[in-house]
Length: 331
Image: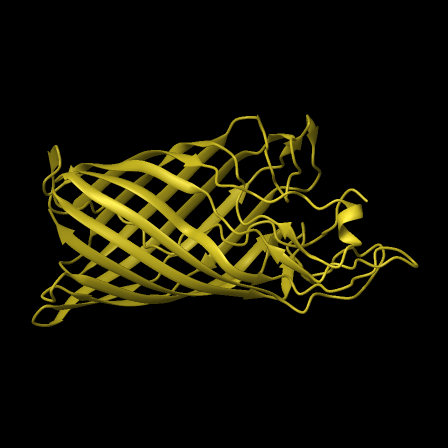
């Protein structure tokens, strides 16, 4: 059996929970962000964009999953090198503290059963390390009070994955990682940010991220396989996001966000063989509200949001609720 899961998770945690804008940190300011999130799904979109039940292998069973769920903790460290360059390490999404794919003793043949105790998702997403460079802005090389434009070259750093379970593994009464939450591949690329200030309290952000993955060998990877040569291609994300910021009291700023995010990946290759219908797309909307406390012992920003998937192909219909805390320190 070449594939254990058909119509299951291709992109579970692909979209960061942070709002994307062209703003940078002031010089000497460190921002620590912590973002717990909870995701849940019981259906996927197939290659034609039709919603389907999540099934381990439709060739042998019609038993559907009880539902995919996870609890993830992300973190990011960002530092203002000067007033127009911010260095960053982002692990968002980060660590899956708990997950389930809702499969238990599913049949893979007329008289054979998988005796894994539980199917789970991988533990770690990959890191993004880079720097946001503001080219246009109030304190940027090109001074402008109405528009901001930033670029952020960076690298995706693979975190450890889990071994792909063999059929011999699956007949053991154990818990098995059935799908990774990220590619676990080295990637190169960057991000573009453009903000237009409509008023002093309202602006619109346009955002794009492109990460290219050169052909490379995996180490442990429950999605692509262990010690396998993978040509993943790229991940491309585009987003439009209105943002509203308004002072509501002394030292308190109210924020509202409504980003629409579209992500696509092409068909990928394993050991030089193109995997048919492996390309994926997803369009989601993530309404969010926040409060920024500017006169506390350290400035603190709190945000809560809900990511709702609107349409897609070869993707899990994953709903995500998140809380974001940001803490600012001056050095």
